[in-house]
Length: 461
Image 1 (cartoon, rainbow, N blue to C red):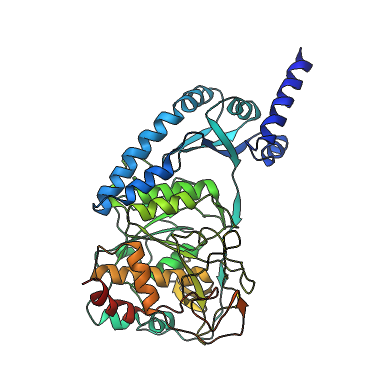
Image 2: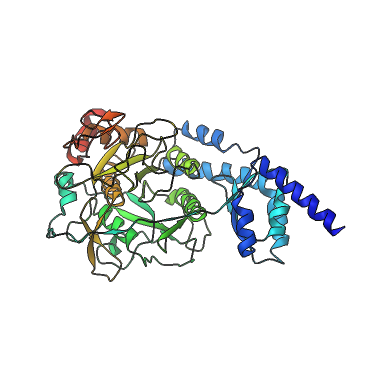
């Protein structure tokens, strides 16, 4: 009888694998460790249709976010009801952790054993089971010979942010979110910009106050809005943050949880959602392969009025090296330029390999960038990477929003492209030459805050 059951289960698993209902790596992981972290997707999901309908609403960002939460949460509750009921029973005998993702109509299950996994495959409503993936967060310390400028750092000056400051706009009233390694919330350059209400979430370690043990997130946020030594592009903006990459690696499961939190922030315990407290901009200095796992999150952000800025990744100098989610059509992808006004060698290039889409949209300073780090409340250092370029654009977007708060993603992208300045070519060709614009090296060119700012009255009076 026992042999018969084993044969039945084996046959069932082979059939499920043939239907591509689960990652084959799950079986390998279960064999090695007896448990696996997975994400469960469902048949009959209408999230794309719902998101498209949200785009047509002529309401405020807060109203759209509330509508999105209510509709998508009800949709997820209905489709996931059977599975969630079964998981509540498993919780009494297994140390599993279960998280509902209303934003993508999925369920995260951590520490699932083989019997639970096999039970999931029997559920008709389950369309796919995917294993958690990890990737390394690039953190490139640059021992620069540059001398820090007390008024404004070279990247901030290079994009002409101080020229916008002279008009009285420094990002006031704008909230910028970050998904990164965290933020040292007590740092002298950042502490006064932290919006405490529903301003921090850590799906990994459940910390309740902003923390960063790596430094990457502190550095990127410093470039966005740091208030010391001219490190920040928008020094009067506020920040909130979600910590998905605390240990030099990022998990796909934690990134999606952060994406959901950005759309409708909760308190630091994951309770009491307040969609009206969502950010205006989200800065993403991370990337992973060429995958679509985060694409639905990007789509929802844009649908409810949150502008996504994403770095292209540091695997450049090769055509098609741009990473996800910068390769998504709705993401404003940012490449890197250096202080000689050339594209950085490491900057991820387009086009998108799967679609041929030209990327990035824009470029910004990303070499020898001086900003806050995590070592102490008074520590600063240089870093290199497209991770440093994207925050310059996030800060610039905040400057433009402080002038005209109702700008939407497509309008913002137009303003950025109109302000873009050509850079010195390096004689590369990725479908088009790098002296032809737009191109797959720096898009329309290096951002210019002053020109984009002055274009607001012309285009959107």
